[in-house]
Structures are given as C-alpha cells and as structure tokens.
Image 1 (cartoon, helix red, strand yellow):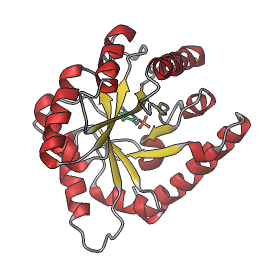
Image 2 (cartoon, helix red, strand yellow; image 1 turned 180 degrees about the horizontal axis):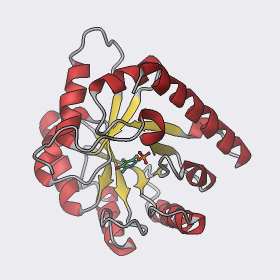
Image 3 (cartoon, rainbow, N blue to C red; image 1 turned 120 degrees about the horizontal axis):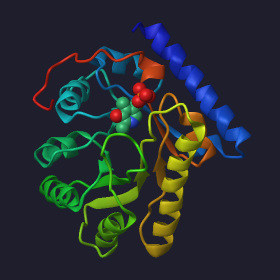
Length: 247
Ligand SMILES: *Cc1c(COP(=O)(O)O)cnc(C)c1O
C-alpha cells in the first residue's frame, strides 16, 4: 500500500482511539497502538515509522526476524521501533523471538515461560510477557482455563523467572458481527486480570491487549491498553507473501 495511505490511516486511527477513549471516560494516553505488520513488506513498516508509529506486532517469528533485523541494522534509523510478538509461538522459535522483541504477547503455557527465561538469561535480557487467554475465539490459542493460567502467573510471582516481567494479558475476540459476543470476550479478560492482580499484587500485570481492526472500539470501552491493528492501517494482507517454514 502506498505510503501516504498508510500515514493517513494511522492518523485516522489515532484520532479514533482518542475519541473512543474520551467517550468512554478514559485517558487516551493509557492506550497504545500496536501496528500489526504481518504479511506486509518491510517497506510498510518504514512508511508507518514516518508517521512516528514505533510499536509493531508480528505473529510469525521468521518473518518478523528478517524484517526487524533489517531495520535494526539500518544506520539511518536512529530510534529503533519496538516489536511485540503476538502469534502462537513454538518453543524452538523462542530464541529468535526474544532477540528481536520487547514483549511476547502470546504466552499460553508454562513451557514457553521456561524457554523464554532460558533464552533471556543467555542474552542477559529482560523481556515483558502477556498471558494470552482463550475467551472464545475460533482458533485454540491461549490458556484454556483460569486455573492453568493462574499456575503460570503464580510461578512468576514466586520469582521463578527473573528475566520475565509479567506485564498483563492478551486475548482475541471471536470473529463475529455480534457485539455482545465480542464484548463478553473482552470483559472476561478484564475480569480475569482484576482477579489475578489482587491474587498477585507484586506483579505489574497492567496491560490488557485486546481489540483489532474490526473491534477496537468495543475493546477500548472495555478497558484495553493495547490495540493491535493491522488491516485498518496496512490494508488487506496478501496470503502468503512468503511460504515460510512456520506454515
Ligand atoms: C493479525 C492479528 C491482529 C490484527 O488483525 P487486523 O484484523 O488485521 O487488525 C491482531 N492480533 C493478532 C493476534 C493477530 O494475529
């Protein structure tokens, strides 16, 4: 997509986020926009950066790694963008994921925490994670139950993962036109977060990553602090731009 269009889309979405926040009685500064650049070429990321967008989301590590190492090695880019990994993560991809990202939003099992800790301690790097909760989306991603999720959060609170900052929660709403279904999903995440914050007051657990191109208004009404928006910024994705080994 052309650069001017990406820039215009970004400006419009930021305005909308602000409007939705104010209408919901919230401070717009509490809400971060994560621009989801998956399946779009690195040029699209450069275009968004021209509009001062500095937070990106990618769901496939291989693709993210090639795009974001290119940007990180680009000497003309002085201030580097921040990358969140938002897609379900295989254990053998954790090493690369940890190298290139500041936050893994899609933690969905204890084994992943073990591996993230191992790789971070090798790199001597701290990383933020969000726990993904399955709240009804058609795919199976995310923790299936509150109890299993709580076990993972408890391990963080016990200090088992010194390089991991347990920063909050993420979910994907079901893909539907039904607003109530979507709202229920976001409310489930918020209620879960509230319960776990009071169980584990020593952990930050502050972020609620929820809301995508077609439902971020509802997500903001329900307390989202990170909206992950792809299509509304970069246009429709072309599947696949690259057949990677992850498919
Ligand atoms: C692709 C994706 C998004 C962005 O979806 P859009 O509908 O294009 O805004 C957000 N979150 C996750 C986890 C994704 O995989």
